[in-house]
Length: 213
Image (cartoon, rainbow, N blue to C red; front, side, top):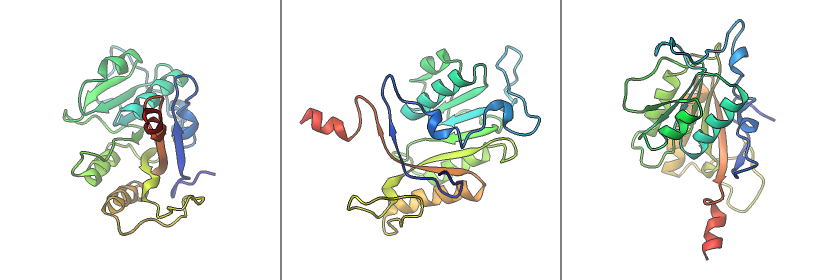
């Protein structure tokens, strides 16, 4: 069950063949053609203006964001998708998908119909501020969705019990306070939060420790 007041805790499983990001986000993100009554998909073309609202803005197009971009474009060919990163390291790969890559420090784009904020909190001194910036780049609930990927690490459960969106959080942790502030900013604007239990790929995740051991 999905609830826009706080979503179920999920574990993201990534493999070269089987990972499907839309299965996580399709109930949060409308298709470009039905973002709102009468809304139309914004097709990429030579005449597109930088001020045209993107169908989807992905802020933090790292491992998860790049997978989302790839599979969103596969499901909605020709959609106007912008992928924002701190550097241009992934830009060639993103551009090859038909996505428009951009650097975070450049002038902000026009508010997008839907926004996914999946930038990692590590190395970010003002993560709450970055989250609020992401919300400001969203066109609002009438046009699409705002989704933030948070972490199940803020939950207080440590004994292997079952958790969901109503489970208590660890109020004494500074990391929890930071993430909770971000969640509140998104939820308060009418967006959705997905608390991910972890990101596992072939070369990353808890299993990699045991393989190397």
